[in-house]
Image 1 (cartoon, rainbow, N blue to C red):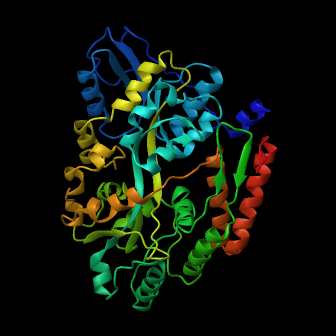
Image 2 (image 1 turned 60 degrees about the horizontal axis):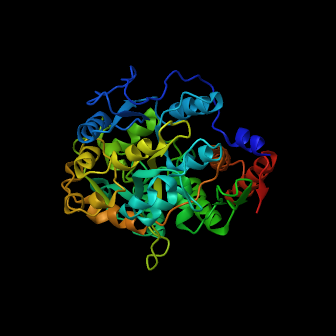
Image 3 (image 1 turned 120 degrees about the vertical axis):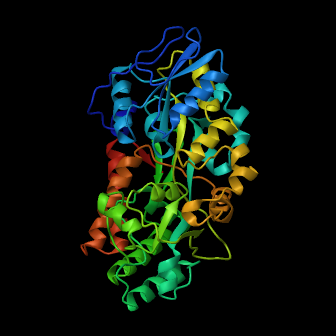
Length: 442
């Protein structure tokens, strides 16, 4: 049974990995960074954070007994494919690996990750918010240390809204009214985009209306609960279906060159975004220097009972191939465990920290962002969103679930089915897949 589950839930491996983990005492040829103490235990790390070499150097300079040997093995699925290949081969994985929280269950079910409760995870749990810690946990196990997150807010073009006399929406009803007003005014663009390939973005929108799509505990790996066609999800998708049908929002795929251009040329007046969105916007080379950007809280269904949501986040996990998991756990817990490291992550890499000593600091709260006219967007938007986020449970086949969601939403915007049917079909497809892979449905 377990072998069938592992094969089905695995990230597909299509390429061999040539990198190997480091062991103590010998410099590793593939290290991107400088090893300060060649006699210390070396811990190999795969990660793709911007400006990460500076963070690695800080760690190595401050640790006599442990040194990081860092390699960028690819971003996102490129890295996951290499990791999957190493899992199947039984060798070639690093000691520590950067993983997005949504894929932790996909690897823990394959016995590829170390339960960090045996290596001092409880010692640092209080340094993270409830939601951040839940995202790296399954039952009593902890499979990673949180690094950065994506509490959500709303980035908007103040100049465009002012031009058409539209107030900044605080509720989704006001959002729809603003979209209609912009269209009625003959504006050349639309209020926002609804990307059918939004994946975690779309799931976050459903979660705001109470959706809990998966019930899963890695301690019982053959059991899963699936509820993706709940009423909250249906209400949210019907809402966006109405905006799409009315021509009030675009349906461009996210993160394409065309989408990036439209984010900054006024085609969209609003970008519902994660806390990493400001850095993403500011990094687009063709951003309009005359645009007036501001940030506001994400719209709510019930403003009297606001629900905060999250889009994305990354972690450091220790792999089961590590020959020294204790030293690897030190790296996972401490590499982003100083204010100095986090100032690099914030200022150079546009990361949103989940480490409370910096998250709760005056420095981060009061940080002014020139791209937003000096607005203190953390204090105004993203810190309250982060503190209100309570966490999420991902499935052990999350990539497959997201792919199926994308297919169903695309069929909806193409007029092939309505929103309710799309989610009912999603439920049926995931139940079928789960049972075919050997899971028992709760």
